[in-house]
Length: 298
Image (cartoon, rainbow, N blue to C red; front, side):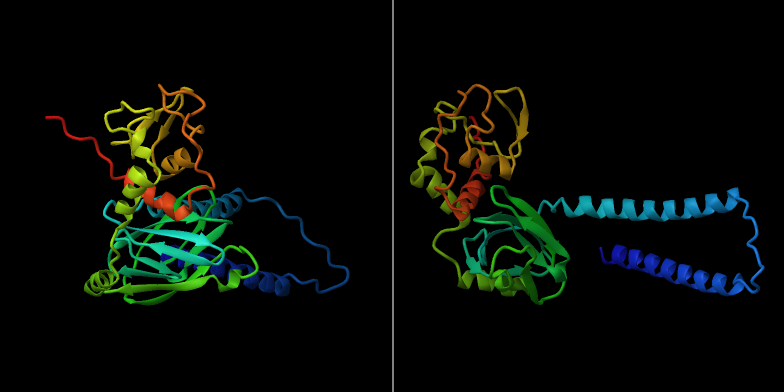
């Protein structure tokens, strides 16, 4: 990304200097020397017009292909990326690690390992921005967004909200603390809570919200089985299909009638959890649902 930025900056600087220099040279060379001078007729040059058309086109295509390649690579976190969940709220960042460790306005990560951040918002639009990692992503109310990065050097880096979110927006700042892997494991162990993220989601699923009463693994409940759902393609009652990603799971919790699976009644008999479940609880529940796999038959 830095190389693309430097390339665009260098190309821009080159043409700024070139155009400015030509303006000065032509102004001096072709200045009007006598009051009776009349400008000469200018006849078109096909070679010249093709040249100044093809060169900018080629440069623009290099920028486009290079940028598109970066865009798609930045949108696809590595499969072995470590998940970290972040919720924006006026005016703080609430961070939760897979182990259940929680932080406010700080995020500890190990050096050299891809980090995939799943972002949510409890109130208004925020923007998670780590300038040193070259990553920035909106935290949008009502949906989950993701970004990823790999820190290469231990240290402490600035963290900002890059979207005006209220009167104390400027105070919504924090730190990303990049640690050697051993130090990170020691920090996690020293702050280990009694329950991790998936276990917290399982507790909600089985006891807190009693989702398991309807979503039985064998599909005999009033709702569809959720085992093996994450990542699959769901056939919907209206004939459409949907990929069961994080946003599908979240939407199905807060607005069950939005996308009803084929074979189930419309509108959904499941109550909506919009406004009654915090974004942190939703992330815990989604994290647990992602782990559900069908039991192996003997």
